[in-house]
Length: 220
Image (cartoon, rainbow, N blue to C red):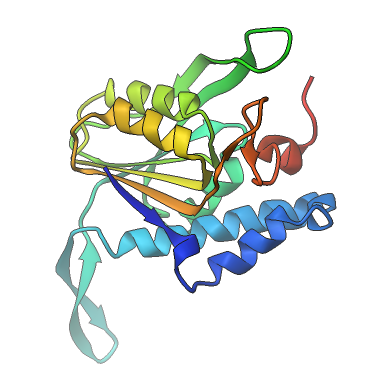
């Protein structure tokens, strides 16, 4: 599995990351969602450079021109609910992609809220068979929900290639994902940042908190 970390590069993504991490900016949900969406747009643009292309002849009012266009059959999938603004950013770029949605969320399995399990209960998606599968989810903490999403999508059919995109990853989540994808060399993990680790409640540190809550409000 190849890992790309944009925080190691000079890119405008770092400006958006500085804002979503800032607890003052987080008080404005509209701004927070907008920045998550813009990170998705920028990351989708970078990802587009890795797709396969073929020339298509386009007729203009004054003649014709051959333009290289992506030939990948894209399937864009996300994990509800936190993934929605990030997914929208990718969809702004890959507006012809098919879409898949998976409900996967963390559940603490002990009273101290230090052990986490993943619960999945809903999925709506076309088959991934032969397609370039792009799974987006803002946080890769323990890696449990992404591993569940990856397994569910691949079970619909073997994709041609897999891209997994996250805003922030923890090393533990990356290792979990490596174990899930195995020796598949056609998997790339795209990260806006990789943080040092997690706290006792399995939140990424320094991170920026719960993305779903910051986008849409606290849950019961």
